[in-house]
Image 1 (tube, helix red, strand yellow):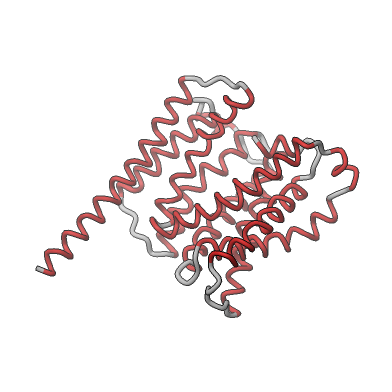
Image 2: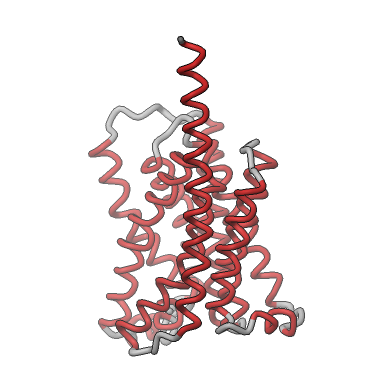
Length: 288
């Protein structure tokens, strides 16, 4: 929703650059203030931070912004929904996170709810979309966000979510800068009204600086696979925002989709809590 709004006068890459440039102006002072005694990054650490910036900030956002401008809205929305099962798969393969059949049921249930909302209850539409060149951009977007999430879990074994996001955002902004110069014209900046820049400021502060830190905090605390299922809440939040600000109508389809999304999330949380309780009981039994 916000991408469509911003792209009325600004190129997608221009929007991405100003978004993360603004986020960097917030994150770096915050990191220096809150974490003055953080570890000194090694060459390997800098490489990982650069990879985070390339995958999660540079590549994902360019692909996603281009997709929202040139791909059908159903296809571009699928990027968000497909991320959850892909991250779960990547977490099991590369992070060795244990994924039970109950976790899989939770992921599938939440994914079904998200797809139900995205397709307006007509899930068969997905099969009729066919393949187009723009789909490659969507695939790159999915893969880049999954890699970003998995590598982030590795980085956060040493660094805090705030530090990881700050350096990733810094590298991503530097990578976007040359493209932003090429695609940005003075006329497009001058023609952008205050509502456009207010929207960019919103995504810089709320969607980038705050939400990205929270995302990594979630991955650090509960694992990438469990955190990923919450991605399916995004179609619901988009529906609520559309109702509040664009007077779109809530329907029974939104209610059904939300039911499946939250059922899948609660199922995964309940399953994870049961696992933790069993582990705690086992440790207590051994100590006795």
